[in-house]
Image (cartoon, rainbow, N blue to C red):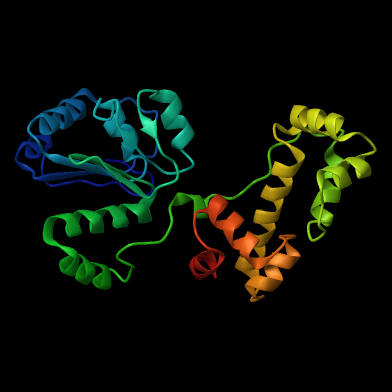
Length: 266
């Protein structure tokens, strides 16, 4: 199978799926590419026989095209999650987790999450001790904290070029460390809070405070990635009222604590 970076050529044909205990479906360079009928039929046959089938990254699209994920929860790489949900509305797509175990059918996020899934299957089959040994040999943790949310760049909502709120957005970014209220933002914009909320939603798709919170989280991510500043200092630089408020908001948005995020990206 052509996965984009290289081509996998197995020494067996599709008929080998009939004797497999577990089938691993790798990612594909083009998730929208039609699934060959022979591959579809082989996967369906294996599933009907009770074979465990797991996908890695965009391999979820192959399972979806084979009709094996209808009505199930599944995941894939966060960049392709929206595409999967649009193409297969019958699938409950969860873009935040590293993998999903439905028992017989399992799916994982990106390539590294495929290793998390494989360790999970080893632990399920042989126990935690064997899985821990496999993790040590692979030089990776047996179970990573958090899900895909920590790897998603917290981008600001797109704003049309030349939008009336562009100068206001720049002002907010320049003043993240201040204790900004909705009234403060409206006062700087020279309008009422009600009008500000309406115009802001029309042009950004969100509210001023939601945009402010996202901007602060993104600033905190940048500081965690590029500095050795203390959590307390970063909380103040990003405009959070206290280190506790910072930790709570950051974990709610990113999925892991600031300390865990720094450990992953430093």
